[in-house]
Image (cartoon, rainbow, N blue to C red; front, side, top):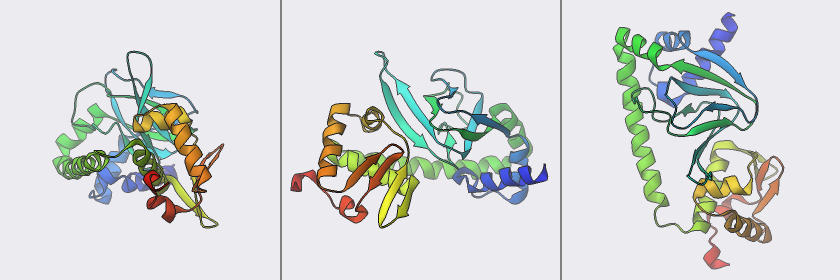
Length: 234
């Protein structure tokens, strides 16, 4: 049992939100965390429902998305081990801002908001440290939005692939393999375009021998070339 507790504490140590916490503070966080297992396609929470817990991925992948009035998905993000969701965090009482669905079998820690509130009343230093990190995260998101503004759909697609490579990529035989099962529709939703446009972009990148698609995700054939690629050169 102690080994499981230690593993969960070690996992929380990797979460950026808790990067400044001491070992004792992490142990107190771990003491209120509830481990859960989810199978592929399981929904963790639905957009608009009351927010009861914040979740941290131990192992697996989670897709966060919104649904418009026509039932179309708009993917907000893909989340990996160490990530927290929703990003609105502990200090916002609004309902869940999106739906979270497991894309592969996953292990996740849930921290009930009420339990966390009681803990920080006892140890307010935890709240101070967490809020500092959240402030840095907001700045990071603002910079990301500024970078996206003005990009055309081809540039957005390449930026998205490079971000996936940074977050999930595994270097093998001078290639970057991204083991993240994703349909072209999900790719399109993630960057705000249509499936047909993504089909054209992937076909072009294949033709230029920069990208391969496989059942488990993508293979970037030449990472450095993709970084400097522009469809305007083609």
